[in-house]
Length: 319
Image (cartoon, rainbow, N blue to C red):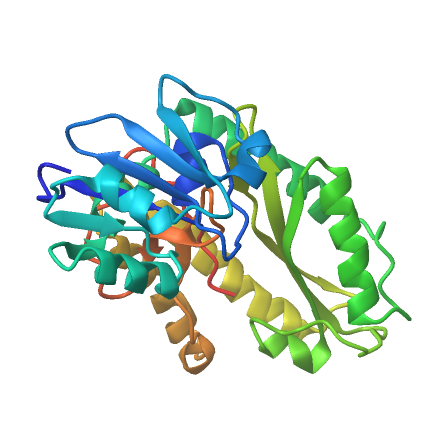
């Protein structure tokens, strides 16, 4: 905070709050906000109705409940004190920021991204273990998919999506974040919404799924996996194209490392797809960080010159 010239951080709904406290605020019109002054102890301002959900962490923060007749903006303002520069969470509702601006016209507001982002981007050993547990869980589902243990032919995309979602929960995740199932022509849409399309024989089915698995301290870490399967025998063209994809993925994985600019991984991966003649359809970045959010820093994309660091966790997904 001192390096960024920030006097106080204000964190409301969004991933930063549970990452720091283990408490995930409900997205309500009642304000929840962690006030973290640079020179004083942190305080979690929380609706009295929600206090029972907060696990006390006296070594990290005090709890300040507020009742229905209290003004939480006034409480937060008092805790801010004489601070001049405030960093506010990127997911904070605009109404709360506007109310704070009206209550404290003396404050200059910026985002917490430069403060919290670098901390979240570098995972410690416990976070790596949590990510591994979540990833291994969806790996098992992917293996079931590839072994034909999840029926596809004759079912709709929506039915298969629901099936995968149930398996994600059964594998220990507490939330399904997404379960994309796209058959045939729909597989060309990266963010396809599973629908009533019935899956037939001898066609490509793209499955992209993941969820959030809570760690022992209550903080949830995400999984994210994509698999393409064929309901029958792949054509030679399918095999050829899929081979380019596997080569691009391997090149991308090998291109990363501590000190390597994130965009270099994208460039190396993308060059394989472009050289194979498919660059026109590679419309997205190569990858993204993964942690308490399924998409977070570091982003593996052209223009991101920030060097990768030990502890970064990110995807390489050229497909």
